[in-house]
Image 1 (cartoon, rainbow, N blue to C red):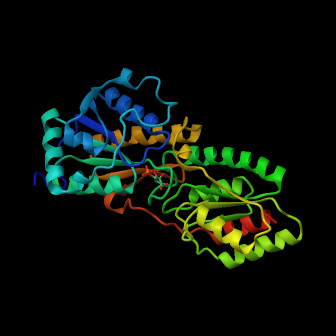
Image 2: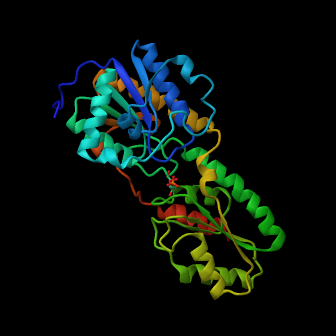
Image 3: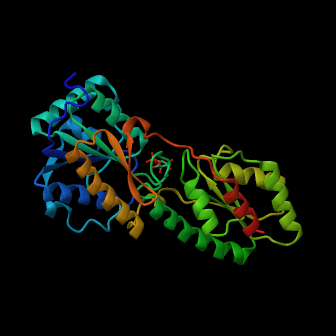
Length: 333
Ligand code: F6P
């Protein structure tokens, strides 16, 4: 291996990449990394399609103009990919050689916990320090109150759910609405509370189908026929279609429809909050590389920058507070 921890030299050429599922605000973050690097006189390179671009040597020098007019755009100008080869030692060796050819001596990785695992493996083996920035709509990373894209995704979800409520109300229907969140229910929880959903099903809590059916039955009796059930795709019951199938079989008089919001939640112009946190995190990542604060994930906690060693920046299934669930129940009565 090419280095031991603590022997890093001053960083002069930064590579930046986006990896894993895209999230709105990634472009604002790329912009911040590029412009901060240039401000401090460092060269900066965009690596295309995440770790795949390191393997393919698809690496291009950027300047302040390369990131003009992107702060408001969803997606990522650097593109993104999930690259299995990078998780093999041979893949990382090839990536390292390609970076060395360009003289890149510091990396900023914008992505989720899978991307950080790759960065951690890489930084343990090679003398290129890595800084992670949490970019995922799921908000399921330890060490940060925010991840880039979550706020936009939730706002996209509530816009759609509000529309669904209009038609649900017109027809006296029960809607099962599935939102994203393979392992985490934050989009469901936040968008559900914000739209007055009657029930919210999330992976963090056991889904009590009997209680749900009983509650809908009770509502049917008192003629409350318009009900929205927001389900995270990763809920143990199996997502929107499965939930609807069971409810239809148990309560055949209810008029049930399913709406799966899907990837619409991953796109669109980032909200103010996502642009702000993306800008702060991108700026801070470059400062970390300059100051020798290496192999950490930059997060924000209690409105202050917070740094978590990459090996602790894992997927976090946080406990959802009882109080939040109580709020859902009381407000949906
Ligand atoms: O980025 C996270 C996420 O949006 C999850 O909520 C979802 O399950 C997954 O990505 C879908 O990813 P893809 O369709 O890109 O494989």
